[in-house]
Image 1 (cartoon, rainbow, N blue to C red):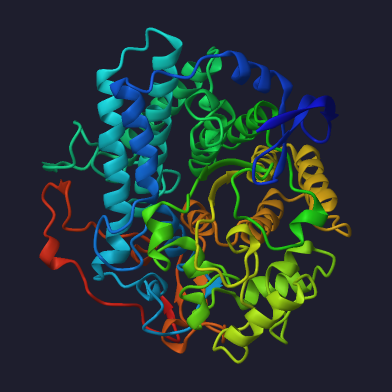
Image 2 (cartoon, rainbow, N blue to C red):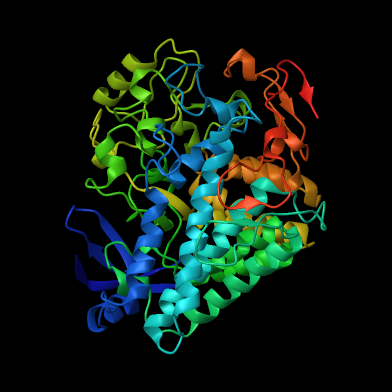
Length: 533
């Protein structure tokens, strides 16, 4: 990479930060803080021979590992989990087909092992790896502090994923049984359930420690790997994670404060309206990305051609989407966007003619030939093909784990729900009006109405990024597909928020949960055409 000589000041809703232009070898131009470039340029890299260094590199690499649980094509790491989570909402419709590897998630099948197993196995593997780093690395220098911060941060995130999906939200059932807190560095064994309260206490301890270790450190993730720095957890990401955790627990004032810390700490900045109107969301170097899974053409997921995120989601790539398994906008979200004609996120889905005015002629031809007349309308074009090569099977596109836009919406929700209505509206309207919808002007004095509007904004903004179902869980919101003809008839039902249908079952995979009769777990699916409580 090369840094331009001239520095500029980026200002906006966040603090003004002096940045320099950076041009990468593939032509992508980014802007990062001037002090970050200076530090990267003069500081040594970490000791790549140290056990902790290699454990951390491996720990994050396993998030994109394929075939960990099975040899099925839905098994390609956390990106697969993201698709599964979104498939359990109203918003990511897909046709009924043997090529739809995520139909078990769409159907809320309680007895299907796979839709209950991926989260369990991948997260506990991450926890075991993090435990190893934490237990065997002294925080006696900046290098070790940075590495232990990675392990603490990733472990907190893994437990947060698990406790949300397998246990009730603590705001509604504070004394509920939770999940296993893994005591050692292996996933082998049988352990008792910890309470939800205890799991969140560990999550909080971990992320607090990560923030402390990162906060006064001369080293940053770029010292691990300059091109792949966004693969790791920096201070802005750590604040962003704590904002998520506080929001999940309904600690709204704390969530707003942490989101603001993340905004002011990260070098990421909001994606401009003009750029947001076109296919993208495939490159970690994008300036609004804070944290990501970075996929290389040499990675197993990319080499597989079809067992990867782009194959399953990108309408512009070759893979399962190219054989008709479109990932489409649900009708309710489509109607919400149609009511906001100036919102650039309408362009993330093709229109009723199976085309889009933001696509090139070759892109429109490719999408139309693959999806015209499909059982589900409005396929997404949010996620571009790798290097924007239409129809490529070189599916090495990166996958976003956190974008700075999320911090603004967390801040707005946290402010509204802690009684700071005017400030909440200012954050919400400034973001949406300036960066997504020039006609946007939302007004209300009711915190619940503002929160509901923010949920709609989150549904639109983070479609395909695995966050919408977590909103259902943290607020006990219904999933309502009863009248949505974009969904196959057999999954056209309602699921009540807070019901057992919304939670994953324990699976007969290590680590086992003490006292659970795995053979007694129900194999039923919800009844179509009615509400399932």
